[in-house]
Image (cartoon, rainbow, N blue to C red; front, side, top):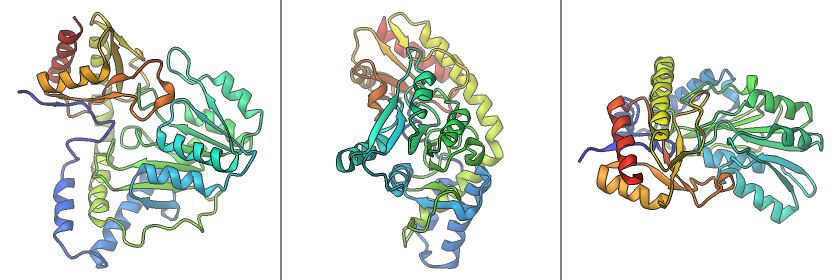
Length: 345
């Protein structure tokens, strides 16, 4: 049976060339504490800083974006009465710690809703900024629909209102530029195993000079094999970024158009422009989890289904989510569309 991997929003496969080999070699070598180990970590930090156009001193290496987001949120010492503005697009890695702060300390949370076209309602956002929030947390791109948010203008307004700002770049790093200073982001959380196609267990948090990082410390024993692999993934991305972006735009456009041609299929965001290669849809009369199971068992297509850890954006019980990459071919896109058609019709 043909196998097609369409779940890159959850974790990239295959990894970037050389990553798996580098991780394996690092795990087979006595690197902990050795100069080679220190160089691998340093190289990873340097490449991340170069990619984001920031100082290496502002990069904190973590085990992943979830830890980065939790660390960033807890670092601000929010207290009773502080207003936090976030969105219905956010991942539970943002929602859960905020809700805990609300429960424990009385922090007030307001959510920017999404419109029927799954874009942020900027009128509501502007009204919330007038209330002078202490903290604004935004996702760079919607992990359900792939829509890229205009974070530069949104966070510039937040800074003008006096707020600290956090950008969740888990989905965008390795797919589009992530530039904290241009985006007016005080903190940026990134993942190494999605767009960058690096290994699990490696991520980072950028901290602006506007925020003291004195209380933030990296793990005493970092996951050296993972960061060795991530440095290879970073180098590969920096060499191929333009080519990757063009390929992913073409396959996403083909995928959206193809799914829209299938009866009983509803694509949540039908605009192929200004988005990541993430497409969510529903099939009338078919449960999303059941569709996912059939796509895998009958067609060898691996995707995701349900709420995708982004519960507030959904208007139903969940969606089927396809997240291809530049690795996928036009033939695979057409094969997947035909598989959906066979289930829907």
